[in-house]
View 1 (cartoon, one colour):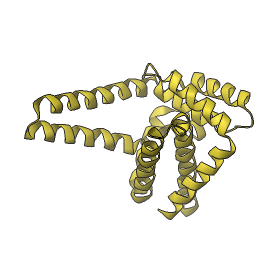
View 2 (cartoon, helix red, strand yellow):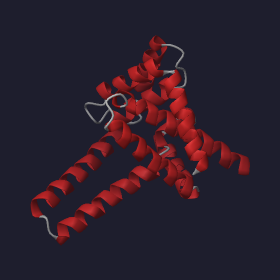
View 3 (cartoon, one colour):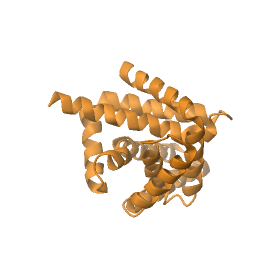
Length: 200
């Protein structure tokens, strides 16, 4: 937990040093994610851009290059994302309109399943951008990394939820939201891979 906290602090400090670039790629992420199905490709664009944030023009260029590079490879994930969002929305609609014990159990179970899937795929996109270009390999590897380092990964997952919640309700932080979250996840992914490789 201490290590994850240190990585969060390092991510926030890095974000402060590259405020303008992160603002631009966060806004680009939002615009390119409007169809929802393109959200994974947009996220890959952010991971691709944060490798080099030397200036605003390069950040934009790298984001667009990353988006284009990983668009087809992440299209399946895009459709899965849409499906999972529809599952959550339909479960909430059912719970809101019926409001009995069964609807509550149904809603909680659906949210739990979707949360577990999101949890096991925590490292998929940063792995794709930093290590392996093939989507299926990254899905398997992310699941293995999460299950082999469950405590560490749970800390990362909870920190992501915490950062997202804080920035969502902050006027200043909201435009920077996705850039900061991606920097944090990317640093945690690299840290975890390096730690596991050093143990071998």
